[in-house]
Length: 83
Image (tube, rainbow, N blue to C red):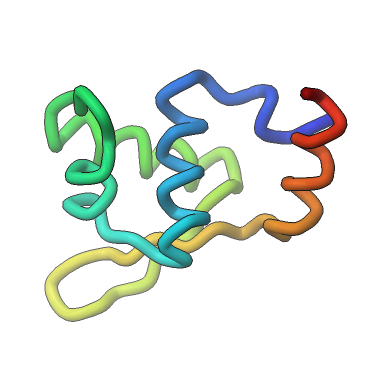
């Protein structure tokens, strides 16, 4: 089963942004979302995705930078099968 299938629409959008960028801060994710929720909501969703094991964070100066823990190519193949 596609692991991204268990995510909500907004969570998938966030994962798409992180995949596209390779790494992203909460501000970058917030800026890339169409009709974004509040900044604190984006941070909460990033934390939730990290708790679910989809993301990990690293410190970069005063902020967290998020990266995917998943193999992007494997997820792409899985997503393509579900189209």
